[in-house]
Image 1: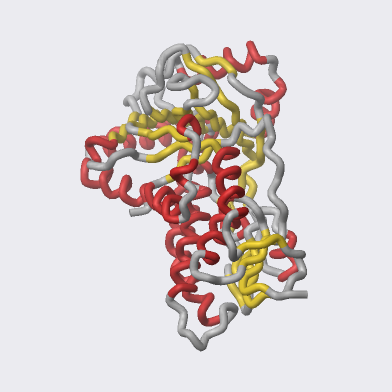
Image 2: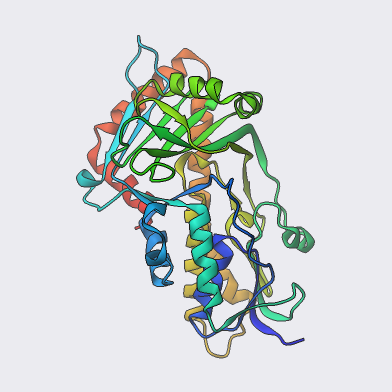
Length: 373
């Protein structure tokens, strides 16, 4: 069996981007998984930061995306769970005020996957191989249920939130104007509207509604008119009248971090290495950050050092420790903060949002971190 320099297990956005990044360095890359067929019911959207867009542009993937698969976010409004008798609890971000072109870009997940698959087909150093193909380095990008990670005996014990994310596409009766909206509700519920162009240009949103398991299951099972009524009550008409524009899907939420993300001849990347709550929209950004970091480590390695050298791979592990740990802790802390039911806690957190809204330097620092700059 012919060997490869790097064997990539996992054909999602992280694994595909890694294969393209390392192939661009002249390394031979084997993909252990075949590309999945496009699904008509795929309602996923990704919120990508500037660093992720830069990586995909460098890989010559970004510019090939259809125009209606990409929507910039110019403003973001975050609302707390204050009652009418309490402080407002509102935080807003503006790309113009922060001196950036956009705060994020919302991308159709299926379109990005398709464009990555096309790029892989035209990469001369990437080929489809058997999962047991010999390789100097194996990159495990299989997601949270990684069988290869389990076979290595790496600790990975998700802390379940008892919540499920409900996702779908929506159509509004007025233009979104590039504004993303987020509401924190009782019990740690988080509802996010991501401005999008599909199925109706300038009037669509990607919805991610994270709530307790029982409520999420009820939302998924509701007839469309009942779901739309619940949705419009929750958003209070801030984005106009919303209606369903696609099927609904759901997945359980958890916080997790692998005990080790590298070892002799292997690395963990993306959701196989870390899980975070989706309230900040940073899941794929963290995974693409893993890709960029490993590509830098491989490009800067000594000529005599093997690709799978354990000390070499520790450089990758050290570089990714702080950003992934910080994002996991931040999203977990925010979720737990808004899950506190007491009126005192509710009043304090909403006052905190209002206070932060007035601190322009801190908002700029947070924006830079979120953009990956």
